[in-house]
Image (cartoon, rainbow, N blue to C red; front, side):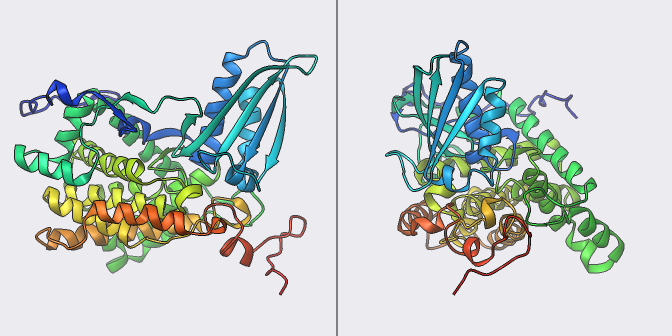
Length: 439
């Protein structure tokens, strides 16, 4: 096994590099999977991780500032308190004073998750101003950021990639290596390490999750009951406990990997760990599966969205299920067309899923969704593996439909905590007793 931070020497020769002409600049091009798998603290990649990154950048470029004003718009303001957005920003800009302005009913033009940072002098005068957006999965986009930038990927759709890989006899992970370079394996080794550590920590902890909903951790109890039950439950594995472990770690602000988001961070690690438990595999095969999963997530992110504020939870849990289904299918020995089919089903069967976190917290229904998406991912992988990979609806078509469905969803169902479960099931701030809205 390779040492930590290193990857194996490949047994085969590296596949030929992509021709130089495809390593050009694309308008709105697909980014590296390094921008998809983001290591950081939960509970939300878009509402906690990205605002922290933005505050750190703005604070670093304004060391002379006496204080800051940060204005949060749209979804960031609507569920920011539950996602600890203000805490993340204040910690990043500490010890200087920070004023947070919440404008949930106003949106900036480029994305529902808009932020404005203002650096102030001792006299209260503006020193610097920055408008930036949290576009999902921990990514940031400044309003003045150029739309053209270098891209490691020449092809922007699954159809193009399938055609190229079929013509050249390549797997998806080999294509990723061609585009990203061999250095990607060290990065994925760290991703794999953090994912496994999140499971281990989550399996050891007990107690009530913060936020006032009274939700208790269940990963340890699930793991123990499955372990003691014997028979069928053990044969089916500890998958629910693994997904709960990571999702609960995320809910407490623990260190996790956004895959592709914090709210859906338990799906892929749970499936990977389950495969390790049940099939003979090695670290190199796991890292290759993570590369394929990253490619799938990247295609969804590029051609639609992974932002719950933009397309609902179908872009978070649905994308995570597609990624995990593709990874599992590959580890089962599936062909690239079977992998594409597994990913297509993982996303297709989450179409229309709303984002309606109770009290703006990544707990109800988010934690359980990680469990059921992990289970569905395995079912999709198994089903695709039984087939010859032929199917009517392509992955690219489902991605387009998901994007359109997301734009058709009322704003209330796109991470504003203004509809669905978020208004049906509420906790008064003082008593902590659940109640239904007045009728």
